Amino acid sequence: MNRFTTVSGITTLMACVASFAQSPGAPPSNQASLAAATPPAAETHRLSAPPAVTAPPIAPIPPPGNLGDGPVLPARPFSITRADPELDRIISPNAKLETLGDRFGLTEGPVWVPARPAGYLLFVDMLSNVIWKMTPDKHVSVFLYRAGYSGSDLLHAGIQTRRGRANVLLIGPECTSRDSEGRVLWCASNDGAIMRLEKDGSRTILANNYQGKRFDGPNDLAIKSDGAIYFTDTDTGLRDGRFSPLKQLPFTGVYLIKDNKVTLLVDNTALGGSPNGIGLSPDEKYLYLTSGFKKLMRYEVKDDDTLGAGVVFAEGDGIGDGLKVDKHGDVFSTGGAGPGEVRITSPEGKFLGLLNMPLPGTEPKREICALNDAFGDRDGKALYIMGGETVFKIRLKVPGIIPGPAP
Image 1: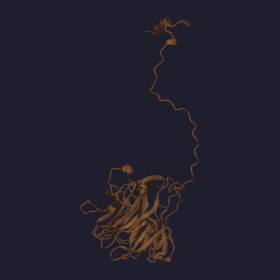
Image 2: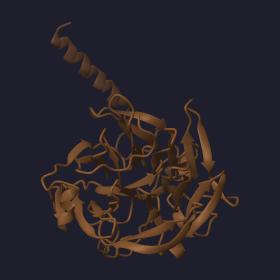
Image 3: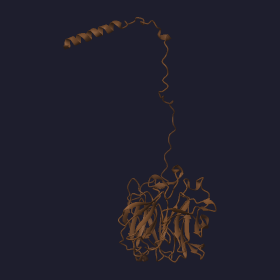
């Protein structure tokens, strides 16, 4: 077929179509009236826009008022504030802060395990619900999983807080320690229990209630040489904190576990604020407790392990979260979620100085703080600092108290 034949065929086809077309002004060929035509069925599947409304203007957003909302803090390097010359017997002015890891959720509650050949560090992650193990070569592995919350109702577990600008849930444990047999104890905050890991890997609940009412969230603990266990209980183990429908105790407090009995020693009213960090003096004659923010209390320990009179031991920056005591009686307390400070206080209550954690000063805002600390290494002269997303280490001149037996 040539192209002339093709064009001719198309022309003939169009002519045939035109012969069936209605002439302008002629009535429809089927004689039907348009007025009597049935309208098409409604398209019920098609979405239609709502009627227009006028929305009220949005009020200006108020300036940041919550932790994490404001601008990043100015960048700063690590530094040591020397408030008293006595600080020089504890740490060198030229001591360097080492970063061991910076990819964690929110680190807390460390303890050094002096196992052979080199020992290792255990510390909790309140976001990941694990206890991490870190060896001296910085290798990290999971030591214990589901250590803070062992249930399955994740929609109702974990109190909300901030990590930088992020809104997060604290679902993991909050502390670790070791007893005289070398067994690991920890605060399973969301389970409301003090736990112990047995040699065969099983878990034992040492305490989970006071007079039949569940704990709100065990936070920190200290173990005396005779086996007495002191611990603090706060609202951080409840999804809505003190407003949680699961809250059964009308107070936060400090407790003693001894001879399979739980005794309330001090509540938040008598303490003058909610408790958090806890530690014993080297001779075990005193128990140190943080009270709210910026206040550290010291209580006499009686022969039956209950507490006697309490006094304000120190006040100021670097107090508010965890604490540990070295073998000379110096108290190393941490400031909590602020800019990141470790306060060193002498056995007499004298303010000696601060270890100021570094700040990046960049976005996204990071949580670089000081939540808790522990002594470690073979000689006990390393201070491990739980810095939120980061784990730090700094060498000291004096050894600290390491819970549990020597290797």
